[in-house]
Length: 133
Image 1 (spheres, rainbow, N blue to C red):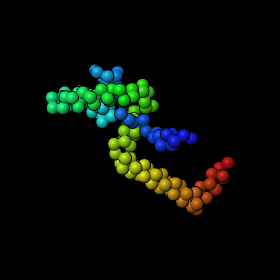
Image 2: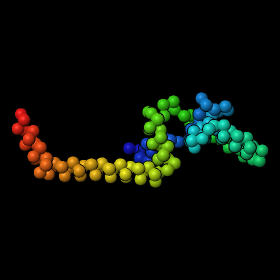
Image 3: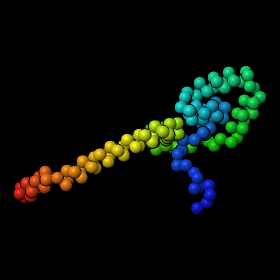
Image 4: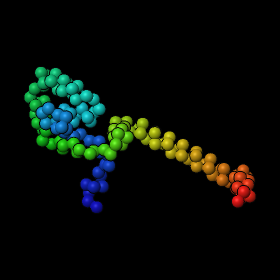
């Protein structure tokens, strides 16, 4: 196993360029997609920032245009997977709490099933069911 693959995240939610939704290379559309906002909002912010930080903004935009990979067409399998990975990236503590709650619920259900299978009621129901055969 090479070094880079050990540290790669399975999370596909990364910063990409989105030329399909973009106007000039897709940098603003990619930033908007990453943060979950409308591309028009990012474009408006970039236009506003252009008045105050012209040279650094243009240099940063060109660098982003050259460095950011293009967004893959099939990045997520479905909307649920996209929502999950976005939550993992933006609110990892909430995702961990949600998973913890789901495991607690499953554990409660398993404990309930174990208690029922080990109870006299289960044995009685099984004996009645066997009489019907």
